[in-house]
Length: 319
Image (tube, rainbow, N blue to C red):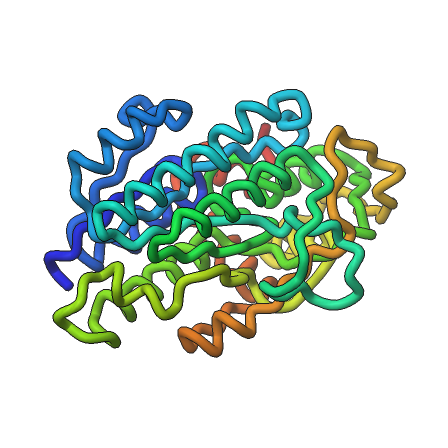
């Protein structure tokens, strides 16, 4: 596996940053982002892939501004649907396996229990529609692909709910958070590590060693839910964040109050139920994801040692 050639597209986001770290143990990784690749240009995407001749392509790039996508639906569709379609087509032509990420927002949240990969999508937002279009385009390309559907991604870097809430509860007396949307907060590192394990399993030759890497993915291609185990609301997630901060000695923190989605109007409609069933992931690859609150504790522990401005100031309660 030392000679495995991996192309990572999108290396600066939460998931991309972690992938750059975890994939490096699997072989030779070329990681690229703007300006090295332009996701709205088919020529740029094709050129990057053809120049690098990867055996595995991992796409961590995405348009993720959920509310802004309502006004930039064409751009969201270009980055989340057209670009992955081109990557998947190039992967098929070159004999590479293609892995990319989708979202719980492809569902409308009306189901009572966890969503499986077989449930019918019905996105409520432009963002959700763009991601679903990408899922369908990757499937229709006909190559060896894996789409990981995840939810509520956060981490120790970048802009995300965890860092935002740590800052707000340190600055304010009261913070109101939606309590009627349920899901599984998922650590970006958990996503990256699970991705690396899947690639390692297939590239390491569970299938015939004489086959190509793409051929070794052929019998497991498809959509897989990939989230932390368990469930909570945004309010419950915030309460857990506050408890972690108090355990570190922080005392002057805001009171957190639950509110309904109707009391916190936003541009894009979110699904009330975002819980995804990880059974297919476990049955196929033997992978079990950590409980969401256990992962949160690990991220907060890591934040204590990071020198970055956004993490250290969040823990300290500074703006």
